[in-house]
Image 1 (tube, rainbow, N blue to C red):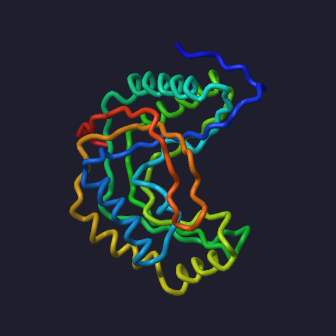
Image 2 (cartoon, rainbow, N blue to C red):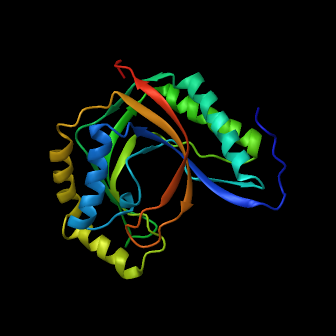
Length: 236
């Protein structure tokens, strides 16, 4: 049974997120993690270096609660019932060729927007299920959970609002002058060409307990609930 929460009461704030992850024993999980962490040393640390392999199902969301354990329990109940309704079996495909997206931010011309991604394709049920999870969180907790498109695994990108100006300038220089992402893309395509799609995936609720601040420093997460999803081979 899920509790109904009273809003406006003084409490502590906990930060959560839901990820779609390849099973940790899979070649994809190991290869993505090897790529993002080795390229941080070989080339330059990026925001992707802060995370392990995942495709985001939601953005980060905060819940104010006087009882953190009850919050996690109720979130887990909501996630489990959503998985049972929408994700009993799934069809997921990951592309073997990375996608490079690069363009100028029109509002801030000096800031380059550049991403290196592995494309992910899921059934529409995944989007419906994520929206259902968000709707139930709004009903129970009175919060907005932002569903994500579930269409990529990040290999390299820059989203560092706390970076020093010279660090962002160096990133922009590397992207525009040194063709950093093109070199990383070549490495990625060579690595992922022979990596097969996992047989199973997990939908995971995490709490972020420590936010990394230095460039490339990993965030620290605590796993709250993990639900397995078999990967059916169907036409997407």
